[in-house]
Image 1 (spheres, rainbow over the protein chains, first blue to last red):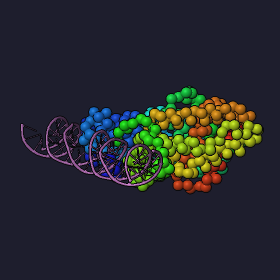
Image 2 (cartoon, rainbow over the protein chains, first blue to last red; image 1 turned 60 degrees about the horizontal axis):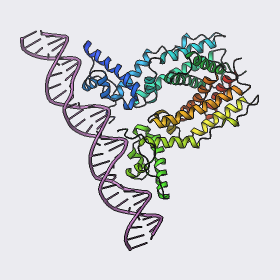
Image 3 (cartoon, rainbow over the protein chains, first blue to last red; image 1 turned 30 degrees about the horizontal axis):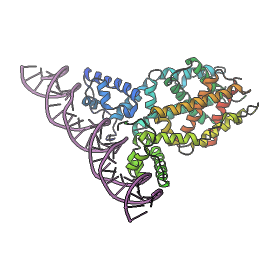
Length: 206
Length: 206
DNA sequence: AAAACATGTGAGCTATTGCTCATAATAATC
DNA sequence: GATTATTATGAGCAATAGCTCACATGTTTT
């Protein structure tokens, strides 16, 4: 499996409805296959087969395997209802509610297909372009959260930058783990504990 | 790359010092190669080359590629200075110190080679036997921590089981992330924030 | 030093992968 | 209906992977 190409753009743009449908079938199949087999074992042939499309067709819309994963990730990011920083309530006494909204958002966003998410996040760092996309997005999010931490009256943390990174990562990754594993406790219990941890952390000592 | 074999045992046991040395050279090289290239791109030929050993020798001590990663993981677990539950101070007022010891333990344990750890944890679930080893170990740890959470007078959490899982995972995975990424803040800052989060969480509301 | 055992070697087999390309089928345009 | 543009096909190529095996080289035992 040679890495061959660096491009992420398709080699031909769909001009007919038929083509657009094929493209979508491929992406849907890819999501399925990647989630089930992981990135390495999710072969392009398997994806094509699952999409009921010839391998040739697949390579008319995606220049290489990486591009398929990249497209799925972009779709996920775009579709994501990530709470925008402006909507956050900064008035005192609403901290726990805010955190809960944030956590619930993460949970909802991952219930689609946690296994695919896992693949995207853990096995994604393949192409430079893709890695940069993720990185830029992450930096932006961290800055937003950091801003909230600083401005909120109820929040007291030592290092807002580090705190922002830790919180974002912790909530996201714990949600992954919980949703991916066979659940032994109800989601509510998990949510409560995660919310409690973050809230108490932000509220500061004593 | 066919998965071929399920065994994790070597096909021949070393009986001379020379052999034991070869085996060790292979493992050291494997740690290097896996850390640098990841599991998929860390080919057995590359490992053999790096160890200055022929590919044939490699396959005399390891039945397949999986077995090499498995051995590295077992080594890591065995060598680990994981705090035993009995040594934990349960007297009041020592919570933060206990948590800090726990966090620092995680940090120390990972400073060897965070990239290898990443590979072992994220790409390991290949063979059934290996997965089970990890699982069993994790269950044991969780039970230990849960026990401490229940018995410590200063700790107040809603669901001890979930809390134990979350704490273990959060500390471990955050440490990974921090150690693997290019560090923008000193380790102390990171440690402080992580300790703060866990401590405040355990201490309970208010 | 010869026989028996242990260890080391690497060319190359088999399987699989990502991906190409000549060609066929279908739709749009004239 | 003929021409052209678009889309679909899949056999098969080049690269690479994990791994075997017939054999060479050491070490120990007799």
